[in-house]
View 1: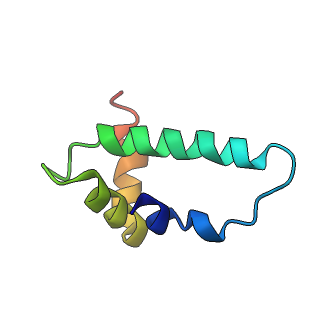
View 2: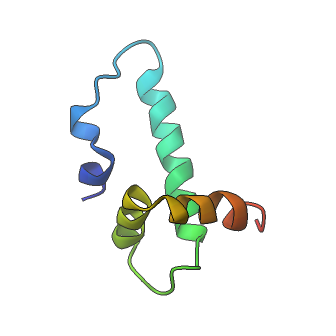
Length: 69
């Protein structure tokens, strides 16, 4: 399901270290999403979906969750 949200199957990154770089970025994003408790007790997949479709949630992650770490 996570692959569908991030559309990994259609990724065309095949040059040099781009695959490894994107894997690191994905891991960072996953860890930040797991740290966000502002959405209540919902599943990880639902959190990712809410980030994909609502910029306010991304803004909350950047300005509220990350500084409190």
